[in-house]
Image 1 (tube, each protein chain N blue to C red):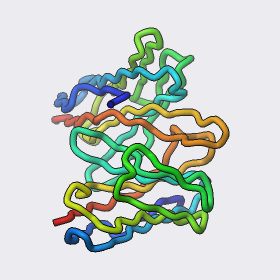
Image 2 (cartoon, each protein chain N blue to C red):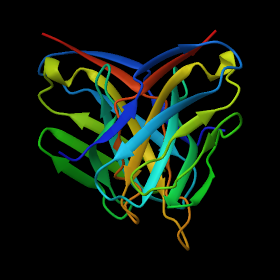
Image 3 (cartoon, chains in turn blue, cyan):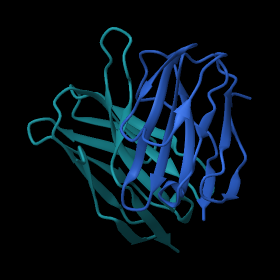
Image 4 (cartoon, one colour):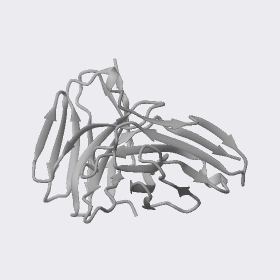
Length: 113
Length: 116
């Protein structure tokens, strides 16, 4: 089954404690992105990757890091989480040239206290 | 700044009615206009998409109407059912030049409830 998986699905942490959210896709897609979803703001892109070892900032990259060492994986790293990073996070993947057709993971709900 | 404006924020329609969700954009560089459907606890999923050189597209009970001169597009759901209750996001995609960002710019979402 073609899918994007994320782990964990739910995470509660404290300010400053480093965390990683994993993302994996099995569709051999070139592009992967991270979005955050907040009420009244829709989904906003955090970072994206066009291929292995190629990443760049989206609209709201502050406080986040990513890496793309393998084509299927695209982890999101919060090195020092803060309460304003409490949000619902989605990983997505797509084929090159089909930016309108993105496949989203099930989401990770993060709470930073 | 928000580049895709969506309304209404929430909508309640009786079963069989035709909910309409509207979006407007400013950036003429957008090359595709998709709609995504999101059920509680799930990620958004592509529902239907339209190119700016087409005025209407239908897929089953879902129709996108597109007005290029007004920079507006809308989603209509015919014969709506309780199972259509979800959050709907309009979006606009940016065609990348030279292998750049092909991101989606999303509207703020519409929570649709279809009552029996």
